[in-house]
Amino acid sequence: MTAPLAPRDAAEAEEAVRWALGVGKTLEIVGRGSKRALGRPAQTDATLDLSGLAGITLYEPKELVLSARAGTAIAAVQALVAENGQELAFEPMDFSALLGGAPGEGTLGGVLATNLSGPRRIKAGAARDHFLGFVAVSGRGETFKAGGRVVKNVTGYDLSKLMAGSFGTLAALTDVTIKTLPRAETEASVLVLGLSPEAAVAAMAAAMGSPFEVSGAAHLPAGVAGRTGVAGLPDGRAVTALRLEGVAPSVAHRRDGLLGLLAAHGAREGLAVEASRALWTAVRDVTPFRSSGTPEADRPVWRISTAPSRGAEVAALIAAATDAEVLFDWAGGLVWAAVAPSADAGAAAVRTATARCGGHATLIRAPAAVRAAVDVFEPQPGPLAVLTRRVKESFDPRGVLCPGRMWAGV
Image 1 (cartoon, rainbow, N blue to C red):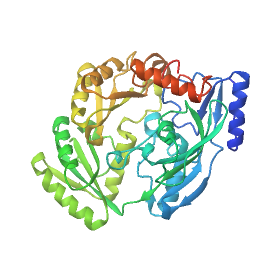
Image 2 (cartoon, helix red, strand yellow; image 1 turned 180 degrees about the horizontal axis):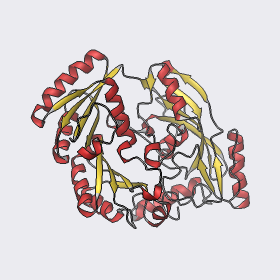
Image 3 (tube, helix red, strand yellow; image 1 turned 30 degrees about the horizontal axis):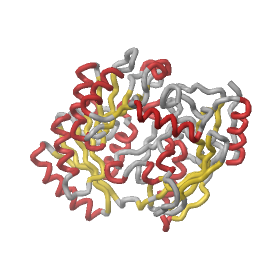
Image 4 (cartoon, helix red, strand yellow; image 1 turned 60 degrees about the horizontal axis):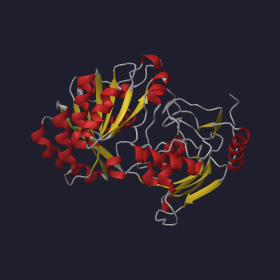
């Protein structure tokens, strides 16, 4: 493998892709490498390191718009918008706990390329819903742009949605534009204690269907809740958590209303602002399943998306087939499962559960040899696989960019 290619600007990024085309090489696109272990292991000849493309190029708080180079640290973006009373409402996950890296090392481009989002997705949407525009270099070695710097942009195809979640297989993002939103003045969490997963799903459904504007709904079984590291959580009991955000009088009023609504579901407690923030950071980053620092010794972790009403059933089916611990987010619509190590990382059990209940699953953490042997992303039915190949060929006809990262041969 050649030394990493480290462009200092968008023109040099285009030049690097053109070089790869000219010499018949393939490129792995990375920022700071915090999500490098996601997907199938790299099958490339060289690395295109975009961490040098850093810096915020435009920020207009009144217009709720921010533009930056793709290699800009996500932590720097979040710090800047926080100074102006704003936030990235899609609440991007930090993979350092799960994958064993350094905290806060992700980049804005990496967040968008993997379409990350946290517990607030049930209210605010995912990264793709806040992605306004970009400049990128395709696998053809051509720089192109899409979208713009306004929230209501209806010019041309919405390619931002296509790039979000493409894991660098279609183009190398060099500049991106996102929308920001005002940050809530305060928050609080209502906890319901000791529920089974099935009862927790019912309680979360009641909360989400209420007028109290819940911005997070998660369930942590007893053993999982005990490993969040959050002070103030009851010991040895399952925790079902509902988050409320906004101005203080509104949060207090809605908290009281939610406590009353959930009275029939079991013992209830409140969680004050600092403990609430710590809890939702732990849910966002799945810290109960944190890496031991030895990847070969860590349990494989799956991220499963299903209908919220089927979350508990999915978890039960997986647990019946393999030793597993789970954490429920998005009111049960997102199930994180840490399964016993095996040759297929529990793939048979997980795929059987999603086939029965609906949904899709992604293998987030497993040794490289396992990720090379099993389907990391949901296997695609024939017509969808054909469409995926056609899209890949449109942007990257010679397979220069991250070949095989999502599906073998694509």
